[in-house]
Image (cartoon, rainbow, N blue to C red; front, side, top):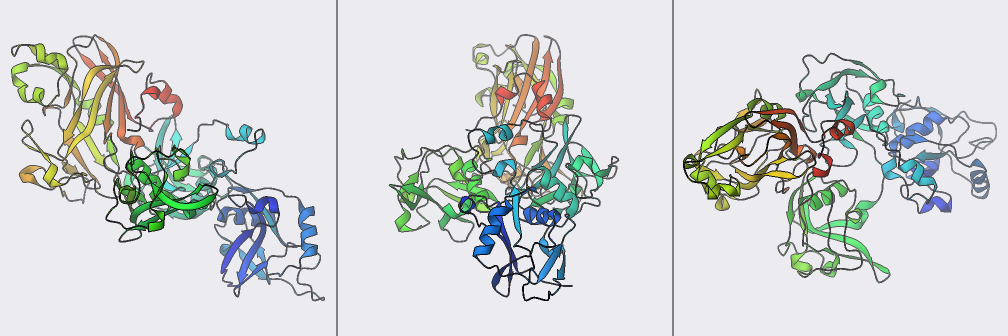
Length: 592
């Protein structure tokens, strides 16, 4: 029977649930001919409730107090829908369930002896209502190592699926990838059913191994790792990385945030709804310290994708005049927040010397973003040590690529250099372009070309307890496509003042024999160290994932030779494996 389901909602009946966000319990109502109707519970099963909860972003359902609802139904006569619902529990939406005509009864009552259907859903940990002092803490602090995660998604509940195996994160090949398998991933993450199962690396390509192939789930597994799959992933490349979009609970965060004055819905001055003197008012955000990470949170909350720019003045966007005054200042986000309110900010104690209006914070958003990842193997395979005479490094010294002690040494002396190649891939969904326009690019004599980013990478050497020993340096780069994956054309080159950037599916190689592709280790004592590279450290250019912009290696130096081993990107190993890297956790990239 083909019945179109216009709309479905959970309507809170009890006063204790009406103001609760997210809405987790109430009548299930279906829109029929423009009117909301209840469903009769005489043929209702928990599997149906599982599907309803999944649609609204909840991983499971629970029992509720039926006595209270019985009393309510007696007081107010329900209006019933004409159909019965029969779900298997695996459907992503009510419209996929079997719907049948309710058998007509002798009396005129359409739900003989029954009551309206009520569901009570269990929210995932990230969406749980504020816990009471005692009950919530036990649940909230289960520190388990998750076996699955999403990466590279623009909004909460979407991303490339990555699974943990033998302490290393890897991807899933998209052969046989289905909505049912995607739903198992979503529920495992504390979300609802899957809206979409995406294939072909649609949400960016991963690095490292492909752990699973030909995944087939029944839909009731607790984890994707319990599903049937083929361990052989021969013939699978990261171009076939599977991804998901999950249903997430409606938290209403976007109702207290808006973009105003832009030329299109993807840009504008940021305006927030805040409580001031007992009433809710719209106002602007102070732009002091406003950057890419804060802009990312705004774009994600509004469902507009990634930030493409963060603006510290917005005089060219005439926002709502009544919302000119600053109502939020000192905003500092980590990047994972679901709302600007969750970021650190000054609260009621506003402090903004620039003022709002023309100087308020603004953003522009984009549905796609680049994602730069360093190739750890290339670093490991190309590292060596060189003693180089000072007279050959005049240019490099002027650019600050040597330790400060080099200025005191004669031109005939040598510097000991740890040299390596940097191979930086763009695994995202759009090209990586420098923020600076051509007019502000800087000519570099050493490399004989223009550099479009003055601080593109940081090279550093640390002791095992995280103390910086070698004076690393900020390397500026000219960005170009050195090589590309098969079928992708190079678009950017440094020669002849050409356009700069890194195309999706291409990589930029800065070879070990180029000036400044080194760390000066002349003053270092023999021992064990941690070598670190950070790409785009100031978050100057927006990316879909900053966690993989850091690369660490173990480094051993005996005074004559150097060994580089265990090189890996940030977030590519399990927490336990990361902890075997001393100094790694207290040395993570800090925000600005």
